[in-house]
Length: 414
Ligand SMILES: Cc1cc2nc3c(=O)[nH]c(=O)nc-3n(C[C@H](O)[C@H](O)[C@H](O)COP(=O)(O)O)c2cc1C
Image (cartoon, rainbow, N blue to C red; front, side, top):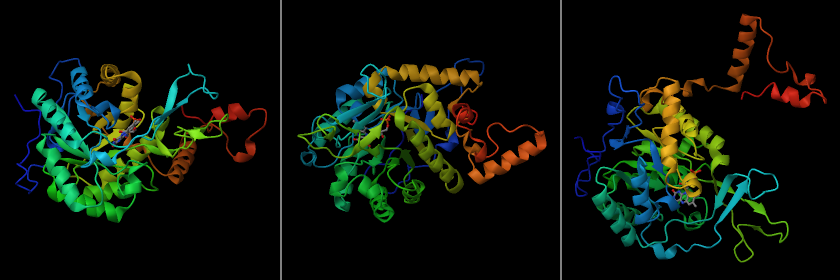
C-alpha cells in the first residue's frame, strides 16, 4: 500500500530534493470505474489526504487531545496551533474572543456570523508541543500533521525552530506570516507578511533549511495579497494558504463605552473570522489563484481558509482553484464532527454535477472572473446579439423612490 506520508530527506541533507513538485503529477485519486461515491481524496505537494478538509491553525489544533480527536473524526489533515521557540514570551489575556450575531441588535439566539479573537500563538512550551506531534505521528503514521511556525526576525532562530519541528515528524510546515495582533509588535507574523522585502529574506532562510513542503500563510490585511503570495512562491515555498484573520474591532459596549473584547477596561484590534469573512476570503483566494495560474506551473498549491461551515462553501473555494480547505472557527462553533457534514455536502455537490474527483472541478470557476470594463463590453455585445431587454436599469437616471427596492433586486445575481 502506498504510504500516505510524503518522503523527506534526513535533516542533514539540506538539499530539498524530496520537495518535489509532485502534486500535479498525481493530483487526485479517481473513484474506481463504476463506483458511485465521489472520491474526496486529494494529493497536495506529495501529501495524500482522505479529503481536502484541514484543521486550520488555532484552538482546534492546540494540543494532543484535540488533534487526536480531529484525526479520529476524519479530518483530511491537521495544522497545529502556531509554535515558536520561547512560549514564555507568549502571554494571553481573557476574554480574548467576541462574536457578531446575525440579528442587528445582537439577540443571543440569532446565529453567530462573525468572530473576533485577540489570541496569540501557542503559549505551551515548544518541547511539550513537539512531544505531542511525535506521539500523534506514532499513532497516526499515515495521517498528515502540519506544524505551524512563527519566529522573530532572526535567521538562527528560524533554523533552530524548523529543525526541531521537523524532527518531531511533521509532514509539512505552514509559516504564520499573518497573525494580525500581538505578534507584529515583536516584528513577527503579519509584520513580515506585510513587508515583501522582509518576507523574501525570511522565506529565503526558511527554504534553505526546510526539508518538508512549506506553505506560507498570507494576511488579508494588505492592499494586494498577490504580492506576498508571489514573493513566497518565488522564494521556494511549495504553497500558500489564505486567509488569516481580518483586522477588526468587534464593537463598542454602549453601556460602558468601552471597546470589545474588553480586558481591564481596554481592548486592542483583533482578527475577524467565521462566515462573515467568507466573501472576502473568496476574493483573496481568487486573486492568488489567478496569479498562480499565470505565473507558476510547478505544482505549487493553494490552501483556502475563511468562514467555511458547509460543503458548499468549500466547493466554492475549490472551484476557484484551492487544493485544500481549512476550517478553524467552524470547528470552534460546531465541533470536530463537522467534517462528516462537510464531506457529505461536498459529495452531494459533486454528485449533482457528475464530478468523480475533486480535481474534476478544481479551478473551474476561475476563468469567469474579468474586469468591470469587460463585463460592460460583454453585456453590450449580448444585448446587441440577442436583441434582448437588459435586466436591471439601463442608466442611473432611471432609479425611482417608490420602486427602489425592486430596482435594487433586479440587479442582484442570487
Ligand atoms: C481563536 C483563533 C486563534 C487562531 N490562532 C491562529 C494561529 O495560532 N495561527 C494561525 O496561523 N492562524 C490562527 N488563526 C486563524 C485561522 O487559522 C484562520 O486563518 C482564520 O480564523 C480564518 O478561518 P476561519 O473563518 O475558518 O476561522 C486563529 C483563529 C482563531 C479564530
